[in-house]
Length: 392
Image (spheres, rainbow, N blue to C red):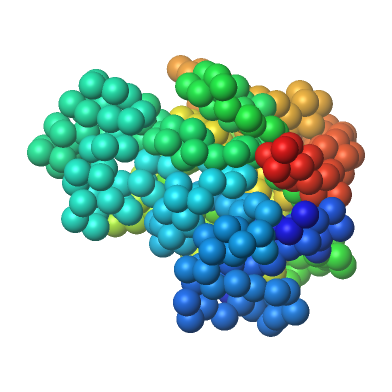
């Protein structure tokens, strides 16, 4: 089978670009793969040997039979996915939804490019008359719609020959809105370089004290990742261990980007690194004692950062909901996003940081589970199954 992979690719600064590049050689064990590239784009050197085709030529290649199926990788970012989204609507293939909420992609590709009618049409397609009315009010008032209520994947799913998601949660949510869809769960693969330093060496390279209790949260800092709850819980726990540190390994985004972060009242013992290169990002993963990866509300996305933390054998505190709820209880600590979230976070930090044996047990459980459930071989095989099914 000849498959055309239409995806962000390195050197584009996109997690999905890295994901696609890592998957390529494994997927090529099952099908013939070529890359689809926009005019003027030059893939990174490590992709130079792969055959590629210009995006405007894709439809003609499918019509001639030179390509059996397009394979589209889609996330909620118009910078990298606007053209892919349009091609996936025009030329049906297999779509990989890295998150269900595509609202920002659709809105930025229509309304924010001056085409309000196309935006209204998309929301109306998803929600009928109620959707049309909601979209018209949003356009008129400037008050944006809730992307979790209006994810706007419906037309794309209806047009596609098959859909891949990364969790059973995402699959169930998609089927709830589109019960006739052909959709499969293929777990996000674990990707780690070899030869990573241990905790002590990582701390030495980062100039971190070897014995200081270290909690870390990774990736862009957004309100959906519950940073205020984490700050308050850390402040409570830190009263017992004043030398402890909390590091946000990433940079503020969205409404937090223009604000004081962290707020002065919650800043003691807290550090924000800003955006880091991947090597240094992994050093902080190795250096931390406990990681916190919260998400509420969820757009059905699976966190590549979380998969890496589990694969490294780190004890992680996660939100008990969405895709995170599918992680076995023995492999993480789960905290509900309810009125008890903060005291439970505080108690979780106290339990984990006060018991090295517990940390090691949870971390080893996570490492073992992740090596099987999130193996790249298993992921590539799942892709091949859906591609074969979609081709018919």
